[in-house]
Length: 146
Length: 383
Image (cartoon, rainbow over all chains, first blue to last red; front, side, top):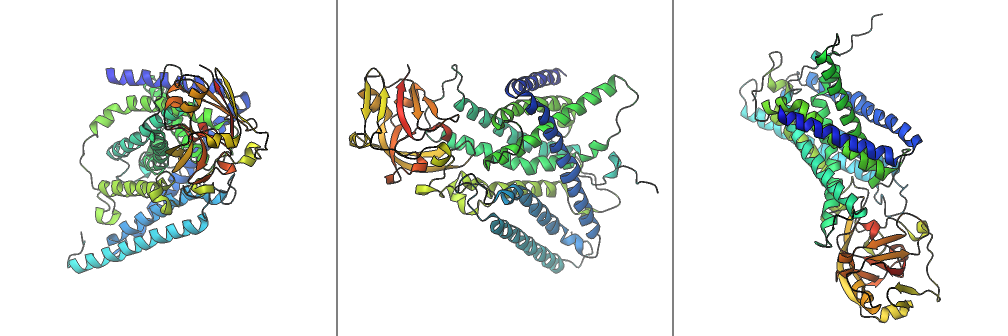
């Protein structure tokens, strides 16, 4: 209990210090708009990104109930997840492509590189898919193939 | 028509919404946040050094490493944070406590602390990443907000740990994994270990495709990084161009000036005639990118001696840059005296490009790029 109290008191102190810094550094209009951005960040995470993941996960799980699919669902799920996370990080790069403040900022062809990256991930996923399919079929007279 | 009922905590059947999973991913996220916070503090203090804190000039590549780690750990924290939020997502739909009681109040406070933690961390990662693109679409100053939010995050995180400590302790080591009755694991597929591998894989993938902006060996695959370390004039990226700084070059009346015990004036040719030294030093920017380079020029300590000042002097560096935060910088005594610190005239075998600070710039070890002042025309010995 003592550890918890120390942690909580330290946490409140450190957090208030951050708030104090914020109040000292930001002008009133910025202080008013900051909570809107903070709220937007929560909405983006808790009401868009995570529900999207939950939803896709639900679809994949449903799909995996089909015959033989339990063998390959891992490859499908991992591929989708990797495509999703790399695409999420690529969004700002794609939006700002060609709009860097000078030519050394964002110097790549991000559209091409993003498509290449996703193609590699999907190829890797497909390789995993066929590999697990073959291996589990070869090794299984059993039903579950686990 | 009847609307479907809103989800409740029980609407999420996956056994991976479990405190053990939250504990493991939370640990990983805590490592990333700790690295990010400490390297961020270090970066803040190198730019805004309090008098009680001596920052050493060696190791020369320290800032390159810490700032590369700062941006890397922040980027890798994106998949980790999303995984953590996914794991605890059902909690979002837990019934608000009712009727009011002490317990209900505690629950509300805990939820408020989590709201602070999640919102601050999500926004911090977003603005941090967009800053590496030098994109600032928000209506508040980046640096101050990023710094203050970091303290708020650490505070909220400590409170979160205090609240969850018994749960974390109970799940610190592997716990029994319950297999749900309805769907065997061969069909739902994902075990805890499988999830951990997948999340670790996602974080690794994001890391490998972005670390190349600070580690040039990974440059070719840094497809998710806003910089490529070898792109730019003379093989070096630029943050602030001469045009953006309002600098057009020099005419024949240009003189470099040292204001010490003696005031000295040099033309560019006279500077070139002084004893030249070489330094292999990186430019390491606060945005996380860095690149090593070969510099040639006059040691600052030599210039100080010429003007009759002790080599351990505090030196103000004044640029021809018009306005801006970084038109002047200060070299603390240790940096001025370091033999690697140069008034550089040449870069990678050629005369400095205008965008790299022609005719003369500062290059010092273990310094953020913003303090490597370009287009220097005056040094003032201040102590």
